[in-house]
Amino acid sequence: ALICGILCVIIHGVIGRSWAMLFASGGFQVKLYDIEQQQIRNALENIRKEMKLLEQAGSLKGSLSVEEQLSLISGCPNIQEAVEGAMHIQECVPEDLELKKKIFAQLDSIIDDRVILSSSTSCLMPSKLFAGLVHVKQCIVAHPVNPPYYIPLVELVPHPETAPTTVDRTHALMKKIGQCPMRVQKEVAGFVLNRLQYAIISEAWRLVEEGIVSPSDLDLVMSEGLGMRYAFIGPLETMHLNAEGMLSYCDRYSEGIKHVLQTFGPIPEFSRATAEKVNQDMCMKVPDDPEHLAARRQWRDECLMRLAKLKSQVQPQ
Ligand code: NAI
Image 1 (cartoon, helix red, strand yellow):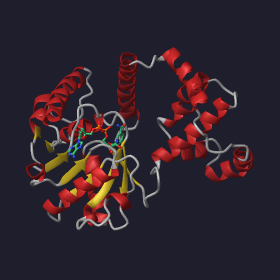
Image 2 (cartoon, protein in one colour):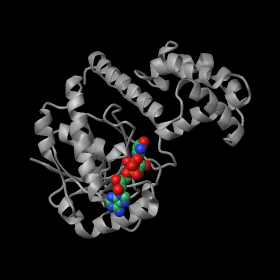
Image 3 (tube, rainbow, N blue to C red):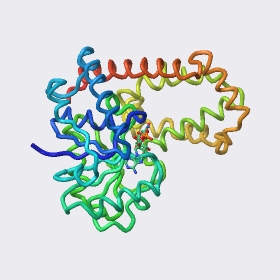
């Protein structure tokens, strides 16, 4: 069997734990390493609980049973042992450039030429993260979307010196575990997902700040409008389908779009006053105490789980 070393898993952060579950669902052996032993114990316990719940809901991924998947995951108290024999290392430590660089330097000195070193970072640039490493050709960012067990996208972002085989192998591994990888050809701040997300946040903020729409009505535009489509087709395919193909769409609508885009305002300041106004509206639906937030996240994850099922029925892989 292939061995898959996973690095640094957590209890609070869902990311390391989710990777562990995804790799095990694909039949890979997973070793968890964290600087805090208690975090490993907690992660193993949480994974067990979560897998049982997923099984009950009929949403456990892969063809192995819960017990089979759990038997593939183990904790490892030292980093050298954790990565021994691994084909892929997925780093998930907190989003701190210096900390990540330290971990990669440590790994660089103990790994061979075959293993892939992959970072879960959401916004650190590969050129900074992997600068000066001997094994830079084997390094890549594989950025998941929270919660990764229900949202399959993984952005693959290379360092300028990353070998094409590293990208291909990571792409294949992500597919093997049921995720949906995509290639960012060149690094750019925010990669692609967050650039799109920030464009939306930016206009949402301006519209609310200018009193054009209330915060909760703004959210409805996405959840009951645009988002209905976007779970199935992207903005470019939307254009293609909304006319007789893309060329006809551009002929018909590009002038109108440019006209509206010219009315967009500057980058928002995210002022305290507007944040408080938005928060007030958000709290009417979801009070911002830990219990209400956790319950709402759980509801969101259940919805995503059902959506994933629906998508697999209408778009067989
Ligand atoms: P977290 O802070 O919850 O967990 C980090 C874990 O790393 C903790 O268990 C901690 O004990 C451990 N750790 C800290 N220093 C260490 C060291 N020197 N060696 C080994 N382990 C160490 O973080 P979270 O939210 O899971 O994020 C991890 C990464 O995933 C970050 O780079 C983040 O940007 C990325 N990410 C997070 C998403 C999210 O929504 N939380 C989404 C996509 C990516």
